[in-house]
Image (cartoon, rainbow, N blue to C red):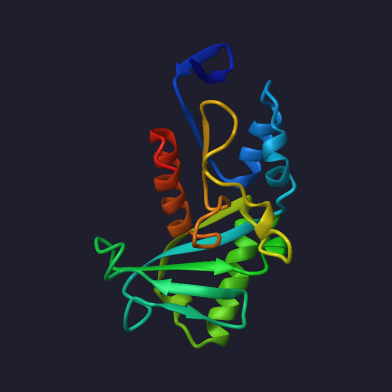
Length: 195
């Protein structure tokens, strides 16, 4: 029987799936009291931060729900009121880039820059905005750089009772929600002994 120690409490299980982003996974692996040599490459996998901003709007900002790209700080943005957030009058989500420039900024500073860039793109975001929230993910994604692909671990490990799930593990997608979901499926298969 293996398990997880949470402070003073231990949860026993036959198998544990470590399903967290890369940086927390690395910290947890380093803290294991077992031989983690098989995961040494994963411990060298570099990570990146991410910053996003989400807007509740008085009406849809764009004509349809699709992802758009721009050369501004709003590098990627999508109207979501007709698909993902149908209960809202208008909903826009954006990834702010480069994250290193914004990860330590106040929410108000990020908002000011995004609204300025929205004006440059002729988007009436300031006029339609009802509420906003900034979401910061320090060290959230693995850095896709030359040589990092070989550092990505598989979901099945040689550590008895441990599997990994996360977009940083080996699967067909890069750092994405889709990759995280597929890795979870592969981790479940590792628990069942399918892979």
